[in-house]
Image 1 (spheres, helix red, strand yellow):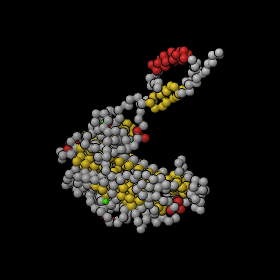
Image 2: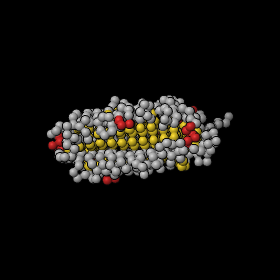
Image 3: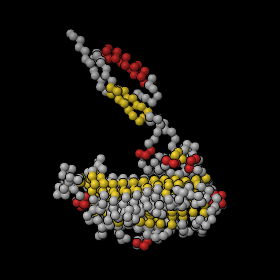
Image 4: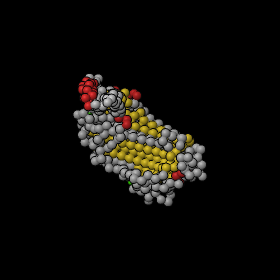
Amino acid sequence: MQNHRFLWLLSVCAILLSCSAAPSLDVADLPVLMDPTVSPNLTPMSVGFTGASYYVALDGDDAHDGSEAYPWRTLQHAVEQLLPGDTVLVKSGAYAGARLENSGTATAPLTLKAAPGATVTLNGPGPQNMHQSVLEIENWDMPVAYWIIENLEVTGAPGWGIDIRGSEEQHAHHIIVRGNHVHDNGVSNERTGIFAAFVDDLLIENNETHHNGEHGIYVNNSSDRFTIRNNLSHHNANCGIHLNGDAEMGGDGVMTDGQVIGNTIYENGVGGGSAINMDGVSQTLVANNVIYTNHATGIALFQENGAVCSSDNRIVHNTVLVADDGRWALLIADASCTGNVLLNNIFLTDHVYRGSINIPSGLANLVSDYNIVVDRFTADDGDSILTLAQWQSLGYDGHSFVASSSALFVDPAAGDFHLRVDSPAVNAGSTTAGVAVDINGAPRPAGAGYDIGAFELQPELPFVPTDSVYLPLVIAVPSETPALWAFRAVVEPLWALVATSLFPGLYLE
Ligand SMILES: [Ca+2]
Ligand SMILES: [Ca+2]
């Protein structure tokens, strides 16, 4: 009998070669997570129900059914058709904006966003808009709630770019403004890029807002539990981020329980206005922000329109460098702004006589320590300048010290404020600031202690495979048992040999 032999084709991918890159951490992709014990705030919007998806396209028609094959033409028509949970996906092109007067629900929000891969520009007000803004989220009869506005370019408004409004009696709530590019709005009329009035549980994140005629982001009118995080705000005429309780407009006049975290704010304030401006704001966390080359104050706490002076806020782990034509890095303007905490900040300025911290006479209950500063302070709103030693004799900043930006940062001239390996900020912070991650979401503390400023120097990572290459292994094997033994006798030592002789960074699995 012919001894048939069969070939087994082992098509299993037998060797996994993994190649290592140089140890690196692409921290830009990591989420910003704050320690939940110090960041109450935003009530989560859980998307538990997904409704229909509708489309808007330049070649669409509002008489269509809104399907991808038969899209609508206008945003205004689209948003009016939605039921809770529905999404409008906009195809590439330039469109008029819209007025959004309906609402989603806590488990089924409404969404308006660019279709996957689309580039969408909203370049002027919609036909029903009331404030000359591009997108208006407002209903004069009831509060609007549970909207997500995402990945849109918003520009060219005579008024505001994205404009969200509730009323004194009924705040709008649970609005997410995410990943939008909001620029050149209100240029002639001194209006803001992203604006919210009487809005609670607002989340503004990952937007870029620039060259607007007033502020980059402006939240006001008694709004509570706001989160403004990971935005870029630059080249706006006034503030990068302006917060105003604004009692003159009614309501409690206080903005409470907010977070302003991980924002990068630069080249604002030519027309006056702080990078982060806080009027009537309380119990709010301002952390991990990077502020540089602004032309007015860095962070300001005061009372102008708010019902209270900004009090009981925690200003921690910010990196602030004011331009030579700017003002103070940190200002507390009024003695009634009590109970604020300044820890682990870098407060530098290029101004020749203004310095790190400016407080008024008679201020009580300020905690300020573990900051990196210049050698200029004032305890009487600038009437007299104190050295760090004189300032420390008042009971402030016992552990703070002076350092230059070139000693601290990797490349400050290029806007890179990561800490040098030999930076004096490394491990020099207080352990009590209570912020568990840095601006990039990397863990705090790393190494021997908390770093000062927005960035925590991360230790070199252990080997992490970053790429895999699968090589097919094809082996011809006879079917008889003795041949299988022979196969194993050959292959298994070979396998072991390969596994033990790989180059560093490669391994066998
Ligand atoms: Ca309030
Ligand atoms: Ca550290």
